Image 1 (cartoon, helix red, strand yellow):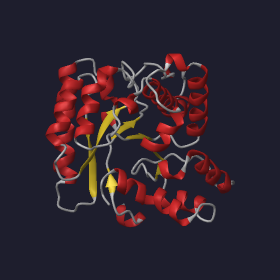
Image 2: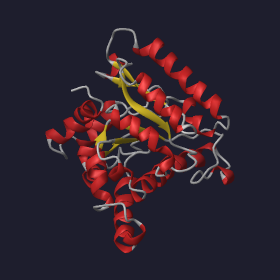
Image 3: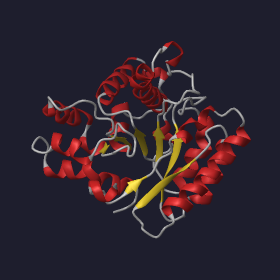
Image 4: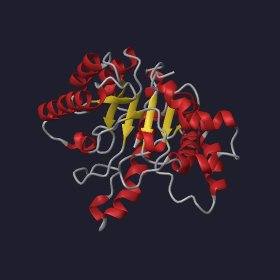
Length: 285
């Protein structure tokens, strides 16, 4: 598939492992995370190719154990980030509960990746599946709502201020929700700044400087490619990274994004979105 689509690198992510946050037994969650990491490294990363990479999956239920996993695996060839299953997090990711995990990621110079998921086991805010009669309803809403809530929690609880050298990646929620969320958070920061004493600048400034977003799913863009290009301008091209979501059936091949933005954005922005920004974030450049 990498050869077919002209991909130089692939960063693998869990599928069923994205439900790890909903495992009630902490010891089981730790064991599952360790087993997944051993499997993904042995079966896909440690083959000498150097073009298949992975974050380490961590159990958010046990931040101290998660930090140990990061420290154990951070220096392994092919490890490029720390993967937090983002849907169903209790407490939400802005809470100081996760500080040991963030500290370990920062000390090991690894970005923290938040991948939302639509597994059937989570019913924690903002997941709405309790009243969804179809998977289509559930999947359409869970991914962006999860990302909006997690970003809000992290910014208003000053995570990027408390961890000034840490970078963050949000995955599989598309891009359309980002400008709206940035504008709304800036508005509420200005209106209710006494409730957000930990921030030194507008929330959107932290987003522009330290947060990155994968592009998949782009949604249906065939009729109005110029609108996708305009949306990317509103988000900020420097924060975006092409993602495919292969081998899932809703994957975006590279041309799905490239054909929408070339001619509308300058060459530097297009190169950044299609690979250079990801190479920088994951330490490949």
